[in-house]
Image (cartoon, rainbow, N blue to C red):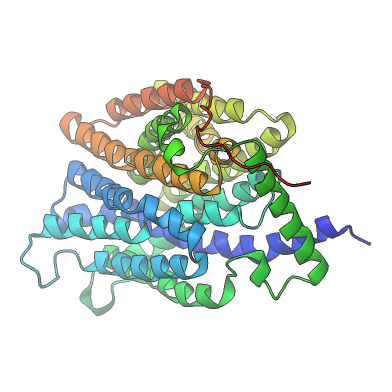
Length: 440
């Protein structure tokens, strides 16, 4: 008969992870589908790459403003209700993006696009760190990297699944006289609204409320999590005020900012880069756009597995960042050799998101629960400002030079610098407050 701990881990994983992956796929798709919509939007609205890059990036300004409160709400209130609220409001904002330039407001077309992207970011703020905090309510520290790896593959899966769907909508759906790019936003904004209402009924906030867990499994899980909390107290894990002063937190935020700067620009402009491969059919260009993200899903799982085996999270955070920079530089140097360019972009895909599950396990290794929630929110909110900087700089350089290579070299430097910072070790300061010992 299967041991109680193994039964509990399997049941919790099967109950939570498929649904969390599904809702993250819809979130990431609504964030990234502007990369496909732009193929028609630019001609329809007269937008340059710089305008599209700014609009893609301004999402992260709204995202930045509400990130930390969101992660604390999940820790101290209700993950189920907060995640449902996020999904419903981001679905509404994503749908409205399809009406940019048509809304009855005293704003020009460009301003409407910018404001809708800003509000979409504000609506989604708190979702990612909220789920990271939520997973800590259900998985022991040694099980979290694997759980986070499964959750993180939603990012590349969103592109692998969503890009062909977005491309199909773009090319074939022209209902009621609306252009295909508008239907990309409208049709892909509806699922998160529906899933938000499902979330209210399906998710459970904490193990003690899980009617779907047998009593022996519930006791095992609650005991394991309680032992972790006690170990944190004995180890004097620092809390919220100290979390904000930790050099570790600042370094992680800076490294994340730099890698997101590179990753998000690639995400938004890879469809345009592959669309320039005129020697390929539209179907093959779509396939080439997807291929790096198939590799990315594999990279996330492989690196998460290896990190569990070696127990060296900093190595498995910094190394993929360095390798992503090397792969991107190789893709640029491959020039007009289409086969080599595609191969190196696959290597970029394998490495550029592989750090994710390991990286997000680091804050909880030196912080208490509330402190970790704040640090995760802070790192994610500041780091995701790179999602504004990367697409904007890349779009500006593309508009200014008429070439993609200049922007790609900029992203390469950002990835190398991220790896260098992620490899830096600092000592975690001990909090001044004295915590009580655990009674025997």
